[in-house]
Length: 316
Image: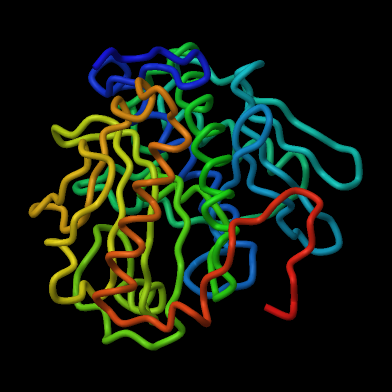
């Protein structure tokens, strides 16, 4: 079967942009931790995430007393813009520079704007991480690869929002977690889960227990690492018996025993004749595997996929 190239879904081989990816993850963690420090806690840590925009990634407005500030990674101009609700702003170039220098630039800009904040400098979800102000190791930034990654996020964000619309139960926003550096959407059964017993580098156990306080089926997109190229994933917590044996689509999808989740290579989606349909089939069949084996009340939780401008039929 021939493969198809689609300009909207750029190639993203991890090895080709590994150093930029690592640096960019650490930069987003600095901004994410500012949001974490200033935003009231929301269930499942939804208050810390970033969001895909028409130009990059945004923190959304962060409260600083009577003022608010928004941090915007712009992957066209290759800047971090700090916009304040009183009209003040600062612009920090995205260019090859160490994490320590980027951290100093961000904190210096906040001082100039009189936006006081103290963050935990230890990166999250990264083994043996270096505190931001001491990290002179990571400093690569290739604007082309950063923009390619964002372009992929734009497509995935769009498809995820379509998938999300087919669920009337509790469901997360489509949001970007800077700790794990992935775009994710999570559906909930409505039932509580057993206490989370795992450990994650740089994340307190009580944070993880709250994040996984209820049963979930979660899907996402991850740019890769540790020998894995850019991939889509889908997992259930707690993993029900028989989940990993369930048949899922498309044929390129498989269950990773080491990660405990289904994976679908990004390359299989972007070169498919219909990337949207291919990706939706993965999200839908892996969710169905989780909901069926965990015996979710699917009739009470699911609905038809939403259509633009068409209200839900509240009688159904």
